[in-house]
Image (cartoon, rainbow, N blue to C red):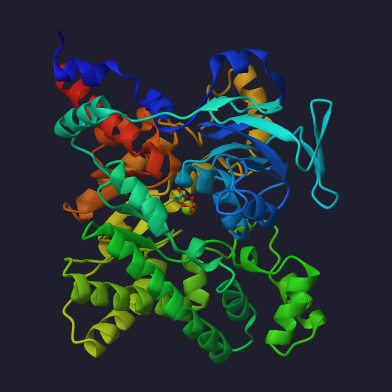
Length: 522
Ligand code: PEP
Ligand code: MG
């Protein structure tokens, strides 16, 4: 009775979330007792026993005893990854929509409520209090990742199934959209899921996530705490096989689809040991005293780490990190091409650039190593080097940056943080007052602020194209999967959006709607 175009336009893109994630049983939800609310950081519904550590989640949850568990933490760190995989849901007291818990949970399609400031947690004695209720390990809790609501008890959930009609609508969407849709993924599991959901490649592989497994973290710690270049290089050499193995696994999963690999980005102290036990172990391994390790950790302390020694600044001070990552990536790409015949062209992305000279500095290091590896392996592999535009200065000087960058990917998480001047991890604590007082309508980390941040994106697109008309343009901040932001990306002429795997269908539909709306208004 209606045309496919009308059908595609009628569906609210965001509502696809309901098809892709578990929801609460309506009747059960009516009777549920809400105890609090946090940020709806990753959609879906989850119910399970409270656990306070990743180890416990792993022991009791998926892959362990097979129980349903909800991991409750002050905040998660990359070391919690295995426990997060084993959990039905994740609840944190701290952190915003771009916090570790939120980003990783969205990647896995796991329900997450983050930044619940009212949650008073004591991880040591395994107890938390919320809304006048005290929860101990093993008590049941339920989370709604769509609303951010937290319920006491075991609220019944129901799984959803994607039937044939879903595929039909998605095929129509793909026919109408002009924007490409890629995914943000840094492991083969999320990559596979994203491709099933229609991703056309990886737009952001955050390499730091690859360093947190138990066999790698000691090596990266040794690298960070090394006193000499030689020591650092030795530690990095130990990391090459791991990083290369990861890249190979990703390329094999991608089966020829493209991958943008973002070089090491977070402030280094995120990798440092936290517990006495870890410090002792590291001291032994490095033939240092516990005191030495503690002193070195103190030296790395920064007052404002997100504006500190991170991103390409790491490669400027420690070029050997970029060398290691380049060697691992090029060797992996060349080997997978040889083994499986995929036509791979690595896309190397340098993060947090604000000045063309710093990009050129890192780019030269990358080229030198890439060419060396090619020579060693008798390969003629091509590769592209580009950058993230995530610092306002990079957007303002995009014409200069484009002289060195073959592509731009807008990192709108950091670009939002730095344009507004508020922390992506803490802003949730005060933004409510802004919504109530109608200063801002909605969280700018969720929905792109087209008036301010969007202007910078537009400016960078125009300036970038002026210097390099064929420059490839994408977005890989969390906005890449939010429908109104996707429409904006279409309108300013980006080539693709990249978002977490479970938001790929939303982006496909939103991109089609943007293209159809544009035709209607012309
Ligand atoms: C960004 O800043 O938008 C981005 C994608 O990078 P990250 O979230 O890893 O800082
Ligand atoms: Mg960033």
